[in-house]
Image 1: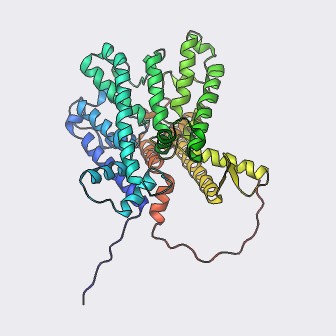
Image 2: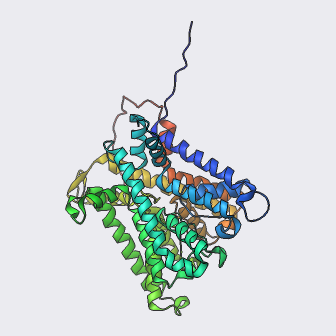
Image 3: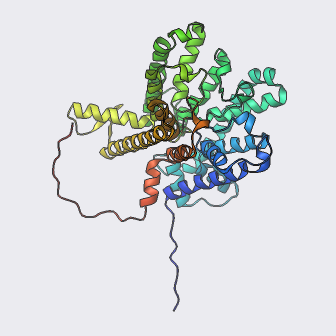
Amino acid sequence: MKFRLKRRRLSSSQIIMLGFMGVIALGTFLLMLPWARTETGGAPLLDALFTATSATCVTGLITNDTATYWSGFGQVVILCLIQIGGLGVITIAVFIVKLSGRKIGLMQRSTMQEAIAAPQMGGIVRMTGFILKMVALIELLGAAALLPAMIPEFGVGRGIWYAVFHSVSSFCNAGFDLMGIKEQYSSLTSYTGNGAVNVIVMLLIVVGGIGFLTWDDVKRNRLHLRRYRMQSKVVLAVTCILIVLPAIYFYVEEFSMPVWEDMPVGERVLAALFQSVTTRTAGYNTVDLTQLTQSGQMIMILLMLVGGAPGSTAGGMKVTTLAVLFATAIAVFRRRPNAHIFGRRIPNDTAHYAATVLVLYLSLFLAGGIFIGCAENMPIVPALFEAASAIATVGVTLGITPELCAASKIVLIILMFLGRVGGMTIVYAALSTKHPYVSEFPQEKIMVG
């Protein structure tokens, strides 16, 4: 009698999760090699794992200064991890399959659809090619634009490398920098008054954070905004609101405090705008964030949790989730059966999904922040700030990351991974073999609110 082993097919969620885990594992191994460090000997496992996770999940939190701790080889490994993490493991894999001439099957197309949050499977391969071409073009243009600032300061060879590194890191919303050669963990604080660097980095961050589908709409419809998908309209509208309003707050409230009185008005405008842009997704900072008030830090936490757009290089709950939640609340206030955005009805399933994402992110954020606060015996705001930065894959910090204990670093690693892969992706990966219920429990009302 012959027995056949039944092959188990992995779901799209499981493929995405395992893909990120594989890249992180490879990156950890490479960063532990002796020649990945500037000093003798390989990096400890926890430091290598933390850095590989942060780079692959395009977060930017670091336990060691990137410029001074890692060698040129280590920095190249980090940059490759950032690029793979920013584009998505599946996007890279589909591109390689396409180059090899192999046929891309239905399973690969389905996985790709979920990875870039595309509304439909049709045209997904064309979309992949478009994404890769646009990424290469934007990063090259960003590097070229940064050259005039980098070459005079660092020389030709190092200037080109720095321009490329920061262009890729900015576009992928990673927040890794090489400015530690000036002062360790300084991020971009030496460029507070440099308008060119500020504007270039902010543009790269925003373009990377609005999502691939929005790019497609811009390419197809140019300035005809009425022809855009409803999702693209939501992304652009909410992104603008979340840049302008916090920037006004930072300028009027935070940078009017006595500690900033020596900062010229032009620098205050740049600093307010830059902190508003980078906080939701990128991880750079041009001012010392510890000098902000706790109110300002709490606003940054909220911005971090929101994040960027679906199918982008950004993390967080996503601006579309926020828009759906607000639209649903308005529909409840007006006693409408469905939410409406830009003249389109939002399915109730989408509202349920948005609420689930909110609960999941808040639960992970609060649990991680409380754990870090207890483990480190520190005030709750810095702990929550660190947890929000990790789960939203942002990377801004109040400077406590290198001093955290091993348990807190492991918590941040888990939060970064969940934040990049997506908590719902993990849930779906774990429950993909479960059979849906065909029977229903009796219904009974419960009062809420």
